[in-house]
Image (cartoon, rainbow, N blue to C red; front, top):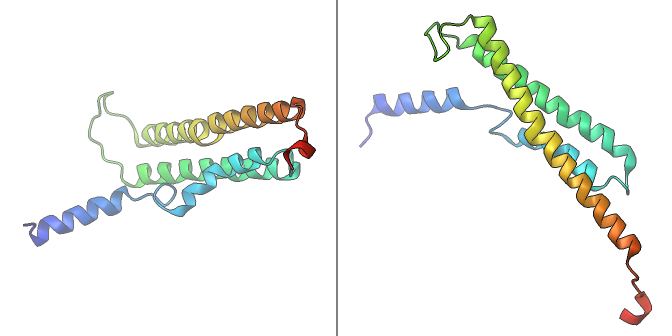
Length: 134
């Protein structure tokens, strides 16, 4: 059985780990470019704005993570030794920005772009006869 003190500590830990950019429906903005890529040939004007939304999400998640690092900074030495508050904040922001950009925007976007192009090429070269199917 969990006592009240332990339960309070668990809820504080859960609240401290909550990230609005990763734990809410807002995280789906990071995948907007995939929708843009999948409809590239039908709606070409939506591709650039979808990338703007995705990169904006990555940037804001990075800023938010940097803010959390800045406000919860403790001066305890890490594996790399004691580092300044500014250094740890920059590392946290850079790490988040690099990871989110690769995992949410570049790699999935490139994969979907290649699949859409290959599918479009395969469909355009296939000798599909509609009248024989009907």
